[in-house]
Image (tube, rainbow, N blue to C red; front, side):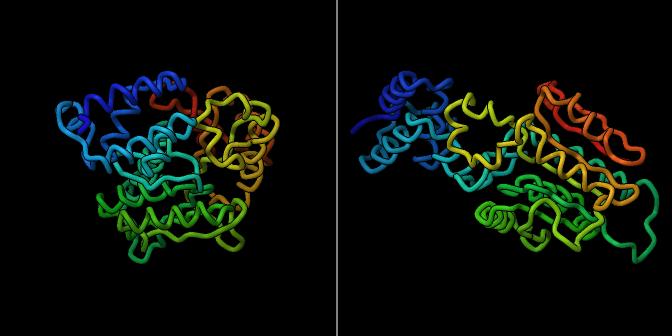
Length: 296
């Protein structure tokens, strides 16, 4: 019977030859997933035997990774802000830089709820997660607000134009016991009759069309329409920005995830809005300009 150490060694070689940037790590993560344990357990017991059935499943996982499929799709899940999200080809893989959108949104909501006493009967703070995908932003925010015991004072709407993505988001919400705290609506950007919102969160496509074919192989497995932001990468974002005078409350704020090279372009898009608007771009956890805060 083959051992953990032997399987990892062989798989690492196969992935290295296939061009993986992290062959050993990929092999460890995928074997841990097959064996139903964490990566530490795999590393601690290289001499442990692996049954034929598990070895066959691991071989299939490595074959998929050799073909370039993202590890998250092969595993069927991805961690995001300490939560595990079901992940497949219906939506983009949640990324670490997007975690900062949730952190900024949570801080904004907490500030609004605590800066002064709210009169009894005050309406909930209305939040829209536009382009929800896996639901990572909406679900993580709902979970964090539940922990703070603020969930009852916030109404979260998750929107996507792809039925498959919206179903995946609902599945993730139910898995984290916040399915009753989020409403899911299929629409292009903002559903009619739902505005205004106090907080709008948007992780929309922002890759320039001519750059799509130069993306790393794993990205080619993700939905192209969820990546393609048009000629300058800001096409879809610009459409939502143009709606802000109508869909954002008077003292509302919108957070947009953008490309690390799009600060100037994003500011220019906001400057074209009628009236007086501000756009401040915050750095993500890697120190790159990534999250645009837009408000009147």
